[in-house]
Amino acid sequence: MPLYIRAKAVIPLSAALVSKGMGLGAVMALIIGSAGASLTEVILLKSLFKNKLLFAFLTVIFSMAVLAGFFYQYIF
Image 1: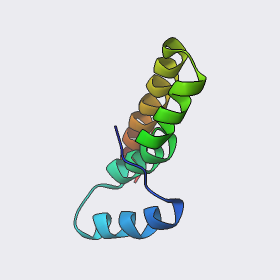
Image 2: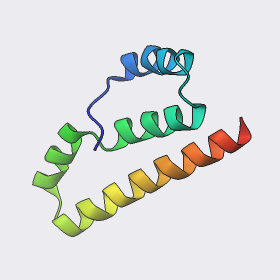
Image 3: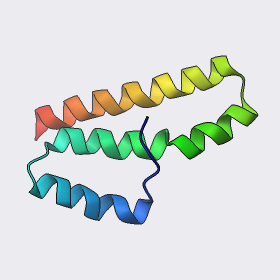
């Protein structure tokens, strides 16, 4: 589960990771995953939603992050 990454910090962090050799697809997956399913957000949503809905939410976020990463890596 990704840790919370602030929106202002994700661009410089992504640029640093790419400059160190990380693939663009992996960076895209990190951006989507950290924005969509951070630990703090999951704790908050757990208090609002039932476990089944929370599991569905996390499954969609992680699936979209992985798929976007693969497609982005394939395109670029």
